[in-house]
Length: 51
Image 1 (cartoon, rainbow, N blue to C red):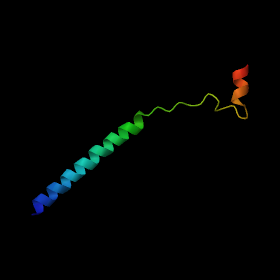
Image 2: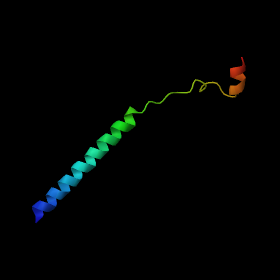
Image 3: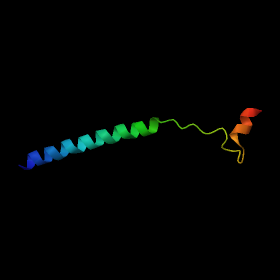
Image 4: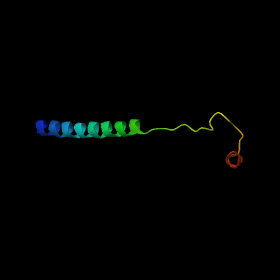
């Protein structure tokens, strides 16, 4: 009986690690684009487009 319990635990752990790996890959693959207006504060975007 202990062997099947250990095998079930092993299967469950393998599934958890597989899901965790795919989630980590997905999080790392997201590209973050920095805003071009990050350094300039207090500008109104509508005024920038009118120029």
